[in-house]
Amino acid sequence: MAKRIGVYPGTFDPITLGHIDIIQRAAPLVDHLIVAVAENAGKNPLFSLKQRAEMAVSEVKALGVTNVEVKPFSNLLIQFAKDEGAQVVIRGLRAVSDFEYEFQMAGTNRKLEPEVEALFLMASDSYQLISSRFVKEIARMGGDISHFVSERVLAVMGQGIS
Image (cartoon, rainbow, N blue to C red; front, side):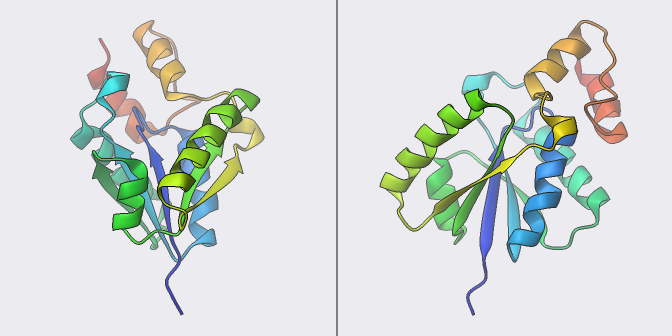
């Protein structure tokens, strides 16, 4: 039987409790889940690719899930998924606006690689309002982000926000 491989991509700048929720819920759906940390220079990330990958590794390790690994990537997501032998790309949805963007991306990816399916997971109620962008903005303005990120990420954020 072929191994079911899923890819959960994102910039993870920083990784939030919402991301962790999706990872925990996606891991049982596949035999192997790759948390794919995108370089995504267009988003002007606060943290380097290496730092974001290290934060993701720390969070995955804390979850104690054995079928999840973290890999950075800098090419097209669909090419990365194909190179990794993935059958599914997992995306988290928080709101209707997320769906519109993800629907377009899934359609484009399907044209490029019909063998890779998109799987959308709705964010849990308690995480629907969390976004990395808001977390960074709140942190920059001196607000409390402890409701949105783990203690490990909070410690890193304290060092990286100015």
